[in-house]
Image 1 (cartoon, rainbow, N blue to C red):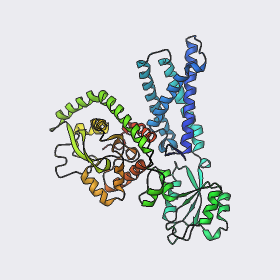
Image 2 (tube, helix red, strand yellow):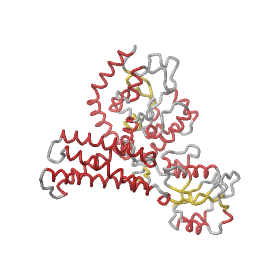
Image 3 (cartoon, rainbow, N blue to C red):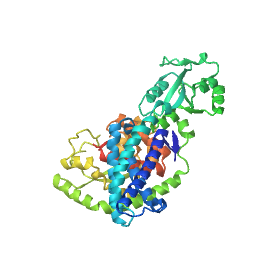
Image 4 (cartoon, rainbow, N blue to C red):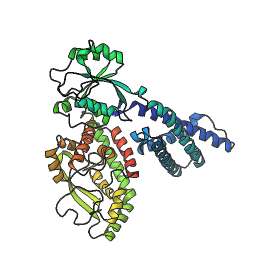
Length: 461
C-alpha cells in the first residue's frame, strides 16, 4: 500500500485509478476529434482544450470514486464494476451538462460529451477486463512473512484469503507459542538464518504477530532484516493499514502514544475543515431550504407532532449540544428513554421511512454544522445515555470525542447501520482510525463515498 496524506491506498487501486484517468482524457480527445470532423472544423492543438479535457476527466473520475468503482466488490466482480461505471459516467455527464449550462462557451459541446460518455464507458470496461484482472492477480500482491502462529497469525491468514487482499503470506514462523493454531507454521528452530530466509522467499515485509512479545522478539534477526531494506511492522499497525480501522482487541495505550497520528499538523487540517464547513453548509442550506420546508409540511400532515425533532447529543470533548432533524418517528417513540433503532422499526412513520432512506431527514443538521457544533465529516454523535453506557463497556470510547462529530463519517461509509453494543464496537474502530488520521484528503474521500451510501441506501434504517 501507499500512504497518501496519512491514508493508505492499495497499489492496485492507485494504478487502476491512474489508468482510468488517462483513458478518460483519451476518450475526451477522441470525442473532440470526431465532433470536429463532423462539423468540418479544425481541431487545433491539444493545448487549447487541455483545460476542457482535464475538467471532463476530473469530474467523471470523482464520480467514479463517489459511487464505489474502486471498492472491494467492484474490483472482484465485473458485473458489479460495470453497473457502478455506468452510474458514475452518467452522473459525470449530468454534472458536466450543468457546468456547460452555467458557463456557456465553445468548449463543452453536448454532442461532444455524449460521444465522450460512450467512449469512456467502453474504455473503462476494457480497462477493468484487462488491467484490473492483472492487478488483482497474486503475482502483484505484496509478500509478507509472519512471525507467530497463534490467534493473531490466524487473523492475518484469514485477511490474506479475501479476494480484495493486497498481500499474500509467504510463510508463518512459529516462535514457540503455547497457543499455536497454524499447522503450516515453520518452527523458528528449523531456520538457521532468519534474515537469509526472508531474502530467499522474497518477502518485502515482516509482521510481528506474537501473542506475547516479552523476551520473545528475535532482536538481532529483526535488526538485520531491517537493515536489508525489509519493512518490519507490528500487528496493530499492520491491521490499521490493511483494514482502515484500529483493532480494539490488540490496542494498548503505548501503541496509541508512540504510533504515527494525532499530529500537530491537524491544527491546519481543522482550520481548513472549518472553512469548508462554513462555505458548504451556507450554500447547501440556501439550495435545500425549499426541500426542508416542503418535507417539514409533509411531516406535519403525515403524523401528529412537530415537523422537527430535537435531541441532545454528545459532541467535541464530550460537550452536549442539540441536534435538529426532520421528525421520522412517532411522538411517543422514546417515551421510555432512548432506544436503538431496529430493522423495520415500528416507531418510524410512513413518510419517515422514505426521508430516512434518502437522508432528507439529515438536512436540518446542516444548520448545526454552520453553527460550529458539528462538521460534515466526523464520528456520528450519540445521545448521552448511550455514550455513558458505551464508555463503560468499550475501551477508548471517549477518544472518539477528540474530533468534532459529523453528519457522515468513516464508520458510516464502511460499516452498516449499527444498533447494538457489538455494532458500536465495530464502528468505534473506524472512528478511532479517523480521529487518528484525519486530513482534508480523507474528508474529501468520505464525502465522495457518501454519495455511494445515499444512492444505494447502504446503512439506512
